[in-house]
Length: 270
Image (cartoon, rainbow, N blue to C red):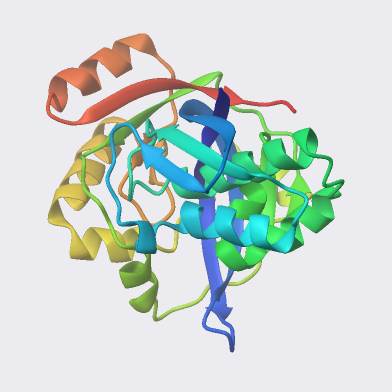
């Protein structure tokens, strides 16, 4: 079984829109212990199935990816891939991106494709902004279209709380509503100077909150109770509370009994 870990954006700046339609980003990312479970075995044909998620094959990016990979590398067998989705879809935690990254890391290692990490980055880049970072399980500054990665040391809590209101948000829709752009700010010196996550922001949070009143209400309430510790990750809909306090975790679970509330570990290694 392969673990595909969720990612969290501590900060996300949208710097502009490129000619190819992608947005130039600047992010500060971490990985957390929440993960999808992936099972891979050789097969006569490529097949991707899910334990608790449904998607049409023609719309399945993972199916498209594995087909193109085995077409490009004729020495590879076909694969049957089964995925248990523990990372909520549309949650801003990079579930599909992490699945693809974990699959290519496994195949690269087990079937001797001999890709360097830079070659892996170039190969997965066309499939999505977050996949390049998801190849790794440690904190990093991520720039460009997700393909420029600089690892950093962060003073992070050992665990954090994530609140998912079970709302599937379209990343495409959120980026279509980006009208203003930020300046470059992230570098190692800036990151090392951060105190209690002050100075971090998510340029997409305002857009998500304007479109979705439920998320806006949750963030307002949590900000009142826990100032400087609450942020939306990515294009939503997961809200992150940067505290691992068990007492706070219990209180938040009691506040929102119908939502998915988890206390997760922060990955700091490999």
